[in-house]
Length: 315
Image 1 (cartoon, one colour):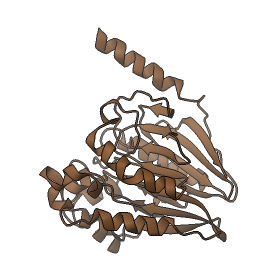
Image 2: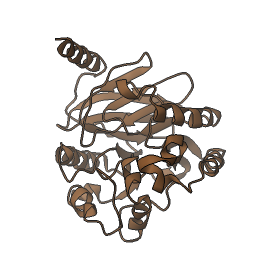
Image 3: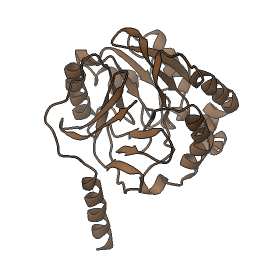
Image 4: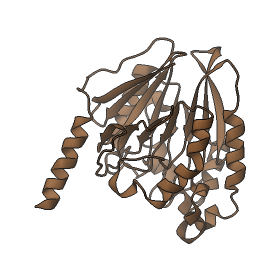
């Protein structure tokens, strides 16, 4: 009985954070458009295909420029090489819409660390759309082709930031990684003070803050928060995007940075709420971002194509 009451309470809390559903995406003129999805590669199982279908529709409507994948790209244990069959069964055969054939910018998740993370880097050399030049990297995107209005995105590898990963099942892929060097690199990227850069975004796999019950103060959440929060605050990062938790979240703790969790592209798990929660939803889905020089719009879409939450950031 207690479990039933608890489940109903969690469902009620999730509902409280969902805005009235809309049937159509809003297209913002002259914006940089991209989708954010995570925790997805399951050979089409557990709603991966319905989410992929809705991603295709959203990408077509918004004329999406690229897709961001927030890690755990291949379950259960990553890929062993750039020729692993999972590339076909979990990626190429699933995200088939023409609107999804543009560039994909992934980061690595903990499940990707169970095999050969560098195989995902190597796949960039034989794939037209998979763009992972290294375990961490950055890119500057122009807004609607205007080089005086740009978005800086740093794609980081959060796995080496977790001390426990240097032993046990993740150790083979973690040992030898220099987390200090990566943080120095990240600070160098974020210190870019060009007046053309209107927004700064960081993408990682692990959240710094989460309403998911079991991970609010888990070892990985605490480790990544301790490693990154100061950096994000110091360089006034506008948004941190991640996955890991199989849900959809928007959190706003103290500081400038908005935290978005998009990790339910093929599985969902229970979630609670925190005082800093703007959205806390256990639902299959993904997010669509539209960025102009003054506004960053977010639309959250579920596997049925309903828009379950919207928000906007203003400069």
